[in-house]
Length: 166
Figure 1 (cartoon, rainbow, N blue to C red):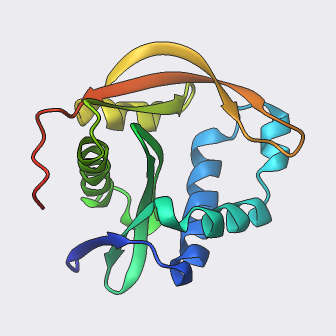
Figure 2: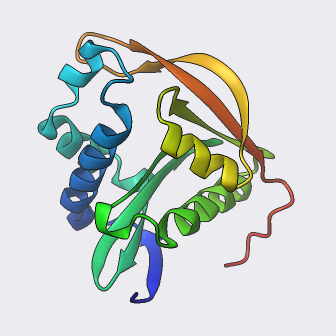
């Protein structure tokens, strides 16, 4: 595998981020979220949101291509996605560690993220990375006509002991 580099996303990364986000979202959410949310998550919705969220995004680049990304806001790791061809590599763990570092660097002692309750693969990954399942909650996902309630699990991890050096 080529070396993996992390860097802040640039506007020209948005198209690659949108494709990775759309494909990964479908893999983890089909059959686990309300039909209203499935209908709202069109390819165009990912393209729009990827452009809007460039400032919150860090990308992993392998061989000159975006291999995955994270979006972090405050203490929340909002998105963690890896391109299909890079799943099972170090990309996801490296991105998640960077998300934890960013949360810590922003002054928070604990990071959190939401996982759709039925996404067993993601839940196992977070648990292997030291995240704890704190139980169910209803996530309010943005939809075209207002929030859509999605049953999720809240995962947390203390980050107060992390080093901010990279």
